Image 1 (cartoon, one colour):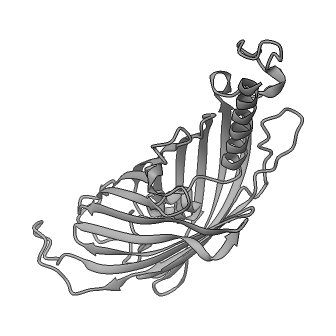
Image 2 (cartoon, rainbow, N blue to C red):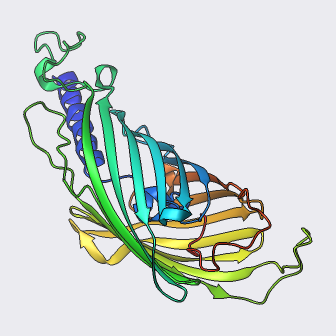
Image 3 (cartoon, rainbow, N blue to C red):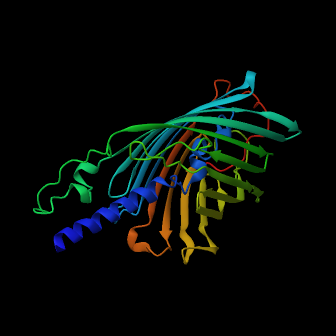
Length: 346
């Protein structure tokens, strides 16, 4: 009976992990390094073509680690004031290895409201393919032979483990000047059914996010070595990123320091003044560093020092970002304008 009891505990643990994982979207610490994932209004925001890659490994010391990889491409079409983009992501969640592969298409339109004041609304359509590699990881109570519990269980007939797809729709907008911005996005507006069981309903909760920041110029640095007669940039950039999805809420609050070409940052993730089920909502202290080259190449690394009950024994989270703003064919000619969305690249 002790063997059967342990098996049942394993079943409960795995199902709890599946439910908790599927109820909340992935979050990036370097949220501005994943601009199309953050807000579809950011498609084409660089007024040029851009490619990027993101990798995140959360809680690597546990079997329940969460890993994700994503890649994106976006560009701006000036004669119709529009940005378009595509974002591809694959996630693996928990001991059950719930896998999600998504492909998103974004469109944004840019509106000039006043001198150095712009508004960009954006929309996104996403197809998500999910599956569970449960056959060699999950054991369900109804499949256990009560007489011979150590025998390999029979396969479930509930359809769990089969691939299934869902569509999600997102809308967002961002208002910005040459040194500040404020944006909102609403993901999963249609609340698609994410149930793992055929015939059951489990709507994916809508995710609301609010993000803002501003740039504080510091004393200019030395001259660049590219004969442009431009001094190196230096500035502070406080930012905030708030997310709410179903019962989950989270706040990222911190700042970046840019001393061209080096950027460092630190921020806090949590809502310490709110509790959930008696637990203080605190997640991590995030530190990051990166390099931002004048040729458009950006490389960043961040580490989440876990301060929740899991503690640092979980291994925290490691995140790497890489992006490249492709040089314009008209390089050397004046820019389309001076005002470009000033959000960080990391």
